[in-house]
Image (cartoon, rainbow, N blue to C red; front, side, top):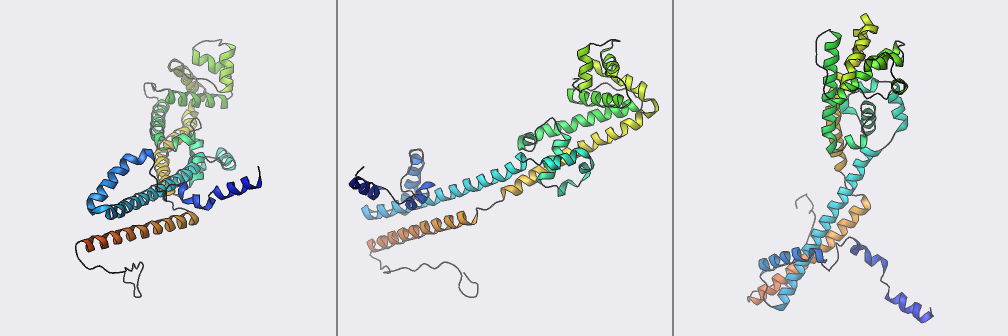
Length: 338
């Protein structure tokens, strides 16, 4: 490339700073194709309101329409910017990871009894990960996760009600839901293992056989049992037999935990919604806010200038006297009166 070519290229390239207003469209004079139809309706409405007569008045009225349109673009961009910031803040609520805190939660259930109204995003994420380890906190903390949280609370109440009746020796039908069955089966299995009952005996009780297969035994050992409806009565009967007088004591903590969690889950949901609302109440950063205010002030000056010029021409056309200059004053005068 010759020196002459470099000179021509340098002269034809726009100043990058001049492209800043065009980046978000707020200062663009052009109307994109996807906005054309809406803009024409807007322009027709403005011209009908201003009732211009002649070429000059129509041009000034068109300038008013375009400036108002650009101000609307600016408002739309500001709304989009705030929405993006809100989404970023909310994503910090649902996506963050705090391994140290989760390890601390895994060591004790004491955090379950902390006042929910004082929980921040870290506390809420960790509590949900602890109470609902089989669900993603990213999912349950989003608005569409409300149904799952409510369902989880109901399943805990069902399981707790059955276990309470079981401990009291009352007749109760086994829960039909898979989640409640799983909770009861897991409780019985863990209680039996705690008493030293072999995985073979637990699997045999669940299946109603004396010699369960090796895969079934390994499944109990690994804690991977699914707990079908037909398997629950046998393992619960074995738990009653092995635990004996200690059955109520062994079940008490689990009952209290399930009932407490059932009460906490809706509270977690409400707290998540509160945190989302708080995160959504954000302002642009200082640099962006300053730029928005500068562009808005520039557009408003153009708007008032075009309106005043149009008004002056219309008054002169009607034979009325018009001022040679106008002075726009914004702000407050001494004493606080606008």
